[in-house]
Length: 441
Image (cartoon, rainbow, N blue to C red):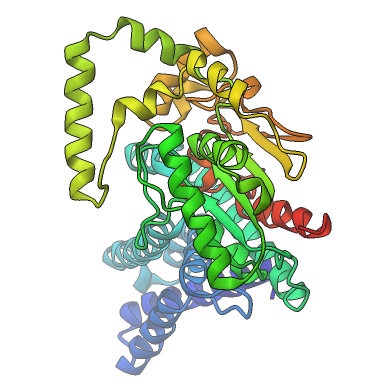
């Protein structure tokens, strides 16, 4: 059943239930009519939507969007019904009129709050900003309707994207489009770890596995210099090959993880065991603003931040975190030196991905702040890494979105689990890995 027909039927039933309640109250009819009206009203509010495609969170969001649509459809209907009923039936005028108004008001209130709570709790595309705007404009006439229509548009767009993804996955279920010849190793960037309960790569791994990918993680410590991180990644690759007998792996590495992986390939002999290296928003040429920060920041400040960070991450499992070592290797001056000793291997296929933030104010903290500094020194960037610095290898993919925030350093790995109307980041990775499969990797 399409969305318009579903909302139409739902609205008719809600309207009929409310009208029956009003008439029963005005004419003092049998309590059975109250029970019938209440039953219909409650069932629709509890189960507003049934779907063969959607389930769980998405089904709840679809139900919420349908209820909000019904709320908007019923507003003019109820506005006409109350005075029309009072004009036709004497029992529904005077005190009866205000009883009707109260019943209508309560029923619309229930439908609205049921719908908006469902959407607020389940939508990932809505974002914090529109949630706040919705709350602030809730009691402002006209503005509240305009904002509600925008919230509905976002929810509908998200549901449409999710429905397409589910259908795509079902249609290609037996194709295993992400079943590459060699397993995939996801390598995280600086200041994070691959945690079981909060995956660094967001919803991407689950989507890849649905399509047949065999995944492993670099799981190197959160902050080491490039050489030390590369040694941990090299050891991880050896263990994967020993465990699976796979001969080689495909690496997909984000941010500093790309530099770590390149070092492992070029300087630690991993070119024998790596078929391809895909870097995601990696500062291959470093960050000029990092040089400036290192030069201007007082030693006491740098050491103080480093000590606090290192202490915190020792508690989280790092054995030898080195904040300053990791950050210094991200400077442009350090990357120039690294690039001299990390030539590309002819045995490995290199490709890269880059993106940029459109408006700093629309992006998440602290990337909105660092974006302005990076723009001054490095040009268009994702909040940390410039587009020009991210380019590496024989193939470069520029990820873009027309949304105000663009595509940030966090967005490219789905860190915030936040969708964009014109960019399906999970499907992008499916196509990325599928492309490796087609190349024979």
